[in-house]
Length: 461
Ligand SMILES: Nc1nc2c(ncn2[C@@H]2O[C@H](COP(=O)(O)OP(=O)(O)OP(=O)(O)O)[C@@H](O)[C@H]2O)c(=O)[nH]1
Image (cartoon, rainbow, N blue to C red; front, side, top):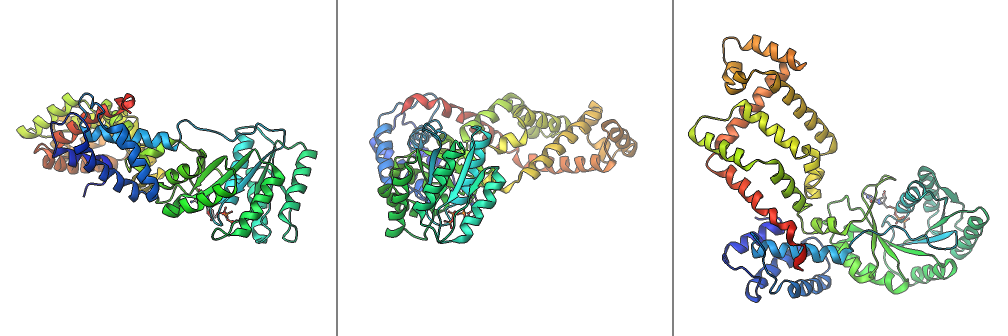
């Protein structure tokens, strides 16, 4: 089954070849696919409906430029609209207030408020050079107060003591007073969470808001909440004038559709994303990149560009011809493959652009190892003579194979086993190439080259 939206739309478009425009009749089927993709990414249904209506309006009659098919054009329009809805550009924390600038953290229990308070503390200290005080107004869970103490210390901030027998308002006033007297730039107030929305919780946080008059009221929401995020967001929006959203646990499996729901319901910008449990796991939220994730295509536009930059179509064509004529794939081709990977910025740079779920499977450690392997292989290949690269058989079953391998290993500064491993890998690759010689390789490359036009769709919406 086709997985990404681009794949699915391409499938559909095959049945309507020759249509140069997006029309009422072809847009309907395509929008159904877009709708499915958004629902699969856990965007809430009412939000999906609104979104589809906007896309339809923009798409109808849009010229399909250059080599784009209507399906590709629609993906571009959807991508652009998603990015625009989630917020173009990035917005940092607003600190434009008489110090201390107060930041109120709101959200359900377990959303990640306490962790995020510490992450923000670190951000404000390191990036904005501020003196930061934190305080917990969570009088229901003594452990929450202790947790904040621990993580604030890790972040390098100062923590203001509070206790379960105080009233939240009392805590807030005492912390504010202390922050003023000690010239803190920022006071971060962590609040109690509940498992679900309840009246008492909302009344309490409203009172805290009135007492503190914060410059930022940040709604912390768990991206894994998916469809439910919309109800939580609505309740907090009704209770508080939210100024921003922090979406946590984006490192999880979720496709992050909650971002779209929450943004639409609160109208507040998504300022940051939590991407790990660790204290430095906070990233500035980037709507455009996130749009790709929601559509399940990573930064596919950039990936396609990189690939077509590195892949020399003429060389690929020659290689395919060689395979067909039976003259085979030799070690020179192998070396050329490695160089073209390098031209594309190496493996990790390519991985960065893949959909997050895919990239997460290959950890950074694996990538580093693969990069090192690639460098070593290149060294070995360069230590061979041109003749050896052209006739790998000299190294695999030639009479002088042992002495040749010894010379190559010495030349590249590696062990004989490394040379053997490379020859094994080459052998496997040769087998694979033979299988693909029926035109599969060329088809794949042409497809990638043909998608280049996607980026140029900026002016269409
Ligand atoms: N993977 C991941 N885990 C996170 C992230 N943010 C928070 N967590 C984890 O989520 C759990 C809940 O986080 P807390 O900060 O305790 O949540 P809280 O909202 O303060 O909860 P209460 O204090 O009970 O209201 C903890 O195990 C955190 O480590 C994130 O961005 N990624």
